[in-house]
Image (cartoon, rainbow, N blue to C red; front, top):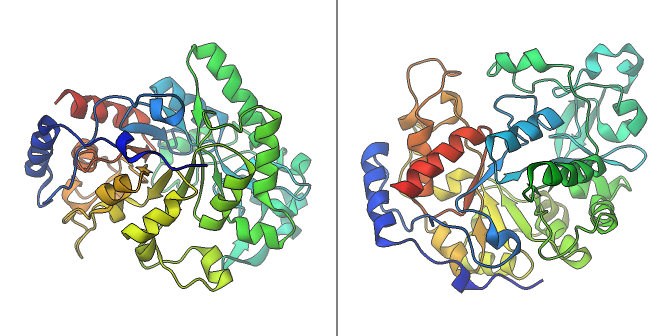
Length: 386
């Protein structure tokens, strides 16, 4: 797959730059914004036609419903999200791809309440980290379908626990059918943004996920350049593998600057994320992918007190390489916001999420993952309309 032409990555207008300057005053000590977000959609088909900044419902509308459930996905669409992250893909023992944040499901399902599965609890090394719980690869799909989803962070989102037990674990094939149904029902194309989770880990278990994903996309006719499915992974070699299997738009996820993708750890590649966000690293990513999904801290770092500081050059550098940027993750609660946008002392209360959105949008990012799509859409409307 070819890279996106740099010309497609137009910079913001002078009015956007002025708006960015206004955001600096509202947001505090954020200086030197390198670019500005575009106010309109891209020309052409496929992902370039999505509105910008694109609002991506993170695991659905996970600020309001247990994540990776059809309840969460449909609420994101009801709120108007441009794209739904449906879902994080992990395999079952019998080779089906299901949607869970992690293969360990003790925190996202009611598996602990099922005595018949008590002996499945175990400790495994997941990307080099000892992890204890129940793992999807130890269950058949039929067994997983007896479980129900629960809120992952009940201490922060106690209100979401009212929905515990309402929805089962969806398979990705069910998601693909749901996508078609929702597209017909809503009269607009529904986009999804699945993530391949821990592909090196699963490949070593004989459960390679890239090939399984590619087969499903081909089966449903969604493996083309303009198909409404963007594929992402934290492992660059997984995205390289997908580039050879399908024509879909692809994105490399990027964690903290000092971290190394786990496939690099396994192969002995010494590069860190800090290397990948340099111009040479971005050019390398652009040779097989169309975008990156950096953590927001790679866009605007925080100081020791958690306040936003000076934006990096990543937005302009990525655009220069022909890549779009969909950073993660915006959430409304104080505990997840930069310190200079928090309100009061309750970590679970909502802070000034609109101020934070304005500041990030003003850097020129092409979109953002958000647990609260309704807030993100209002923030985009405010930003675009000045």
